[in-house]
Amino acid sequence: MRLEATDLRSGYGTVPVLHGVSLTVASGEIVALVGRNGAGKTTLVKTVLGVLRATGGALRLEGVDITRLPPSRRVRAGLRATFQERALFGALTVSDNLRLNGFGSESHDRVLDAFGPALSGRGSQRTGTLSGGEQKMLSAAIALATGAPLLVMDEPTEGLQPSNVALLGDHIESAREAGRGVLLIEQHLELAKRLADRFIVLEKGEVVDGGPASDPGIAARVARRLLI
Amino acid sequence: MDALTLELLNGVSLFAILAIVALGLGIVFGLMGVINLAHGEFVMLGAYVAYVVHANGLNHWLSVPLAAVVLFVLGVVIEVGLIRRIHRQPELTILATFGLSVCLRQIAELVFSKDFQSVPNPVPGATEAFGVLFPTYRYLLIAIVAVVVAVTLLAFTRSRFGLVVRAIVADRDLAESAGIRTGVTNLCAFGVGAATAGIAGALVAPLGAVEPQAGLAYLPGAFLVVIVGGYNRLWGVAAGALVVAAVQTGVIHFYDAVWAQIASLALAVLVLQFRRPTPAGAIA
Image 1 (tube, chains in turn brown, orange):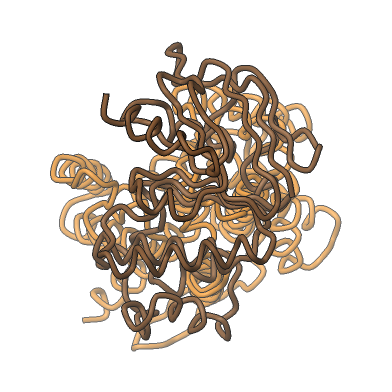
Image 2 (tube, rainbow over the protein chains, first blue to last red; image 1 turned 180 degrees about the vertical axis):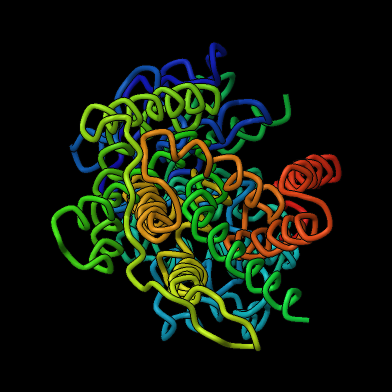
């Protein structure tokens, strides 16, 4: 499933944030979107999912225009996103969060065991009482387990301990091997370098650089962009 | 002792009426956040369904499910035609539902006239229990309300539909991002809220006059119950109705009905003063 954004624009109220972003994510491809704080990465995630309305441009999923569809229709069309913040219903139990995302009780253990014992047997716990890292793991585990052909993951490693960062990387690689496309918004440059097939650098709401991971100079350029 | 028992039974009866009238508002306002100033008119229309059933010589009890169906359909039409477009803008919702309440009253006047109509008590007479005689219809009303409130609470707390509603209340965008069609759920919830108001109207119709302005009397009480009980958990409606009924019955017993109303309003003001930042009410 191919995601294609063409000249995508959006913002908050009268303040524009994205000034015409164009990108593609194909099946079986991991595209790492990097950029400094305030570059518009989270705004892009929200616009792609439809939580934030695009003010211009177009968004296509497998050639079908989804620019005006509500988020739930996009999800049903095959798109899934994990958010940097507010990714789960904190007042509900872990099991309730799984049910809301379409998992029957028979599959709860499979999702919760994705990251080893950390979440095992925590189904009845109120989600808001999980640690920040555990909530990140749960959110990522849910998105990965849905089997959605296209994943948009906003800073999924933030707050994770190193062993779980590596484990999450394995899961994302498995998703690619299964033919799923992943748009990975990631500050953790080492993980991005390990996983990405392509890089896109966002700066002040515009794509300013990018290229295949095989490009020998891309890693250095990305690192320089993040440091400047 | 008999007088106290009678007061207690009156209190329970008042609790039942308050609970059933406020239940729909608890769903629409409490859970969905839609300030529906036409809720009283939904109750009034439910009462007119009972009147039409009576005028056509049909059994009164038929009016209860019929009012639920009629008001559910009306609620769905209103949600699609009006609420859906404005429900994220409280000030517009207030104006629109106020306008809707005026329209519904005028329509009721055009169709049924301004005249007071009556629906005869389907179960006249009294039943002796706890050493006192108490109207049989009120016993039945209490029982039916208990069933309707219990079923509604279970539907909103134990079912997937209830879980989805709670998720939408907590975070609409996140719910959409989980693939939940919030528009469809809101439609159903508004319809169910209107349907319970219709049931309330059909049940209270034999207790008073049926007339176009009748809804105005129910609206303040319903908001009072939801405010006191808390408006993010539906069981707060039952708890709020219990507190308001206890206060009103107690004050009526020692003073009079005017002071009972004043005490209820003072209670609501007190609750609003000490309300936590989240709209949890005094009890929930």
